[in-house]
Amino acid sequence: MLEDVISPDGNLVDNLLELSDGDIVSKARPNKCKRCGGVKILGIEIMGAYDGILFWECDICENTILRFKKENTEKYLENAKGLWTNPSDWGYVKPSEFN
Image (cartoon, rainbow, N blue to C red; front, side, top):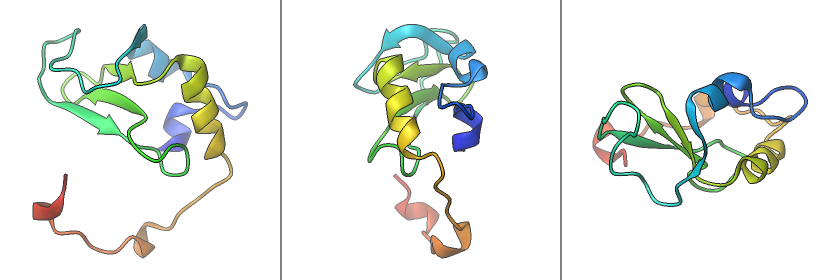
């Protein structure tokens, strides 16, 4: 996931910013997507970058809403550079326990 949102030089990749509402920042989960009106807004967490939701994403049109200013988001993403994880080590979580 990290490679989807950050470039090798540590900046947010263009497609994440193209899908975002620009400089709009929303600390709380938006009620609906400003682009398509969808109400299913997901909180995206990047392991190793920030302990919690880093940005919001519409599950319908993939519009991204930053939770922090762009510069701060890039700094958090910088924390995860060079880290990796093995999905086999994550264990199994029953779908009924998803949040």
